[in-house]
Image (cartoon, rainbow, N blue to C red; front, side, top):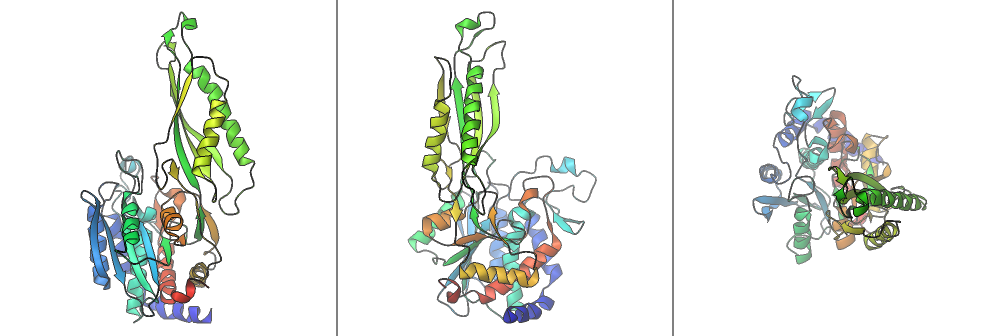
Length: 421
């Protein structure tokens, strides 16, 4: 710990606050809503090149939509650290109207207000990406190099919400390159989703299900000629909520909490007639170690057991496949890994109130690395997920600057000794 404190004391006065903030403002100022990541990827390629990274490459994972990667060589060799995160953001609809006539009016202006930088994507997750780049630049300013080789890989297509996109094409392409040996195989990875500088070695899994309840429509004056899908949907909803209660009664995961089913939408009727069809949308949360296949089987069994009238049919669709055809798998890395301890120590040295071990209250793409490739992965970056995807998205400036210092300390210390011990 004394060595860490000494390194912090050496690095702190060398941190160029204005340059770090300028980098973040450039990143936010480059719109990259899902499907339009190319310009931001090119900006990142320029930054990696200026850092002295080797093999800086822009590779399309879809037409006109590139991933960007590069390798910064370490001083001690024999190991590889992956720093990764997604380049795309969610939409900006409503932002200008919300902040009209204020410094925050443009979602891409990266306005500094109340000690924070505001804008679309600043938290999710451009502050995380910029933290890794600025940390590497800080080490160079001190005449230091990372302990291990660092693979930077910034990928598109993580966010959902835009038609025809948001199915993790970017990380699927990166994983294929790692499996093919086209890029180094990392020993440990940090995915820079916002965590308020805490460390998330576990995350929930999820599935989204659209249930269609089909009956037979009929004129309202002769309802006996129809089969009421809306009435059947009431029974289906009761079955779903009972199933959720059974899931919630399970022993919670110490970091991720309890599983559940949340009904997110219902649509039916609309005519002066017996409703012939009703659609129910839901999301189901899974815990680390739980199977998506079993979760689907349990949900469908519960729904089909609902008491509905003869003539009702029920169908299921799963529109949000990620690393699994039904959705996204849960993930867990061992929280007592030496690399995790090293990251926590680096954060604690700057912010004793941060660096806590917690679970991610979201799904992102670490399971592609942990579950498919066996690479221990954690989430860690400045920013608060609770304001992301909203019209209040911002990152506290001091958290961003502290994150740069903490990541620089971690990069200096991470090497082969932090992998298996």
